[in-house]
Image 1 (cartoon, helix red, strand yellow):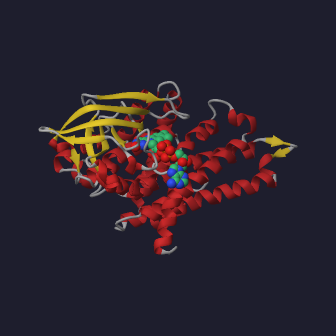
Image 2 (spheres, protein in one colour):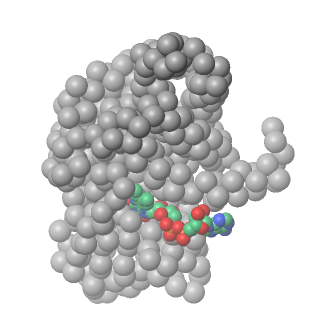
Amino acid sequence: VGGLDATVEPLLEHRHAVLYEASRSLHKVLEPLERRAEQDVRGAAKSALRALAQAELLRQVVPKANGGALERPEVRALVAIRDGVAQAGGLADAMFALQGLGSLPLTLAGSDEQRKAWLPRVAKGTAIAGFAMTEPDAGSDAAAITTRATRTLQGWELSGTKTFISNAGLADFYTLFAKTDPGAGGKGITAFLVPGDARGLSVEPLQTLAPHPLGTLRLQKVQLGRDAMVGVEKEGLKLALRTLDVMRPTVAAAACGLAARGLEEALKRARARRQFGRPIAEYQGLRWRLADAATELQAARLLVHRAAWLKDLGQERITLESAQAKLFATEAAQRIVDLALQVHGGTGVLAGTIVERLYREVRALRIYEGTSEILRDVVARGVLEDGAR
Ligand SMILES: Cc1cc2nc3c(=O)[nH]c(=O)nc-3n(C[C@H](O)[C@H](O)[C@H](O)COP(=O)(O)OP(=O)(O)OC[C@H]3O[C@@H](n4cnc5c(N)ncnc54)[C@H](O)[C@@H]3O)c2cc1C
């Protein structure tokens, strides 16, 4: 399949390659958890988080001043880790990702007190983070959220419903987006830090195709202090989009990890399985498809690392590059994992095989943090405004 460093060497520093290998070395611990997750998603999720914390990988998601590894989190570190971890499975990857997604708004715009209270715990895995934007009537159209935050004498009161929230019920805190000015559309959204045990907050779990701790949050007059606002009032949507700029290449990296694992399994099977007196790897009908899959995987990794490298280099916004990386990598991963299953024939659909699990795990990546359709829209806007570059 080709190691990560072999593909994107010019864009990597030694420390990123080390993180990739460290992530892959956790497979022995993480893979059994993926199997346990089919019965006990929340227990397995917590164990996966502990393993990631013990390997000190979570320190990459927060700044050094708050217990992190580097001055500021590097996107190349995050993508190297997600590619490596996702090769073991989607649940461990999601647990790593959510520590980043839920805490990045605090890193980008939180007060000193908010950062001090939560980020060191995120880095140690002793606090679980969540990111709550989506609502029953506002998915792709985030500006249409209706969760309301009103000022009170003590601070804020929040009411509304959030759904499809990862880590719902597990999270110790959520970065949650609500309207403070309902008449202003997307310009009336503000981010809040909501503790997982806040009174008036209730959780209903949702079952998913592949194990993932997902649920609906109901907020009924949740009372928060004056210090609960994250960043500037009415700049919540901008903060969410800045967060997604950084996280989308990492979703794309996770897609590469799932695809790399699928391709590896496909190559193994193609060499070992004999039909018509020969290994099936000798038939051109399969060889060309395997060649396309291997090529798509490396192309996806290059897009991922290009977006990450530009951000680490100091480019303020990478909206176009990160949308292109996520769009291409998640769609390619779907094709590659589908091929991997096809190469396994009937064995591929047996419950408990690796390709069967990958087939379920890869699907959601084309939906969350911007569906493929919305990303095409972002890319089209970018190239129509600025040219193809
Ligand atoms: C596993 C999982 C985890 C998630 N975790 C979180 C989380 O932690 N926090 C959070 O806030 N959200 C989370 N989400 C929600 C996710 O971000 C939304 O599902 C996503 O934004 C799409 O919204 P929707 O499901 O309401 O689909 P809709 O917006 O209703 O879209 C339905 C379909 O219509 C298409 N569509 C919509 N608008 C357009 C358009 N303008 N042009 C073309 N096509 C369009 C979409 O692409 C899609 O195919 C998660 C989702 C999943 C599946």
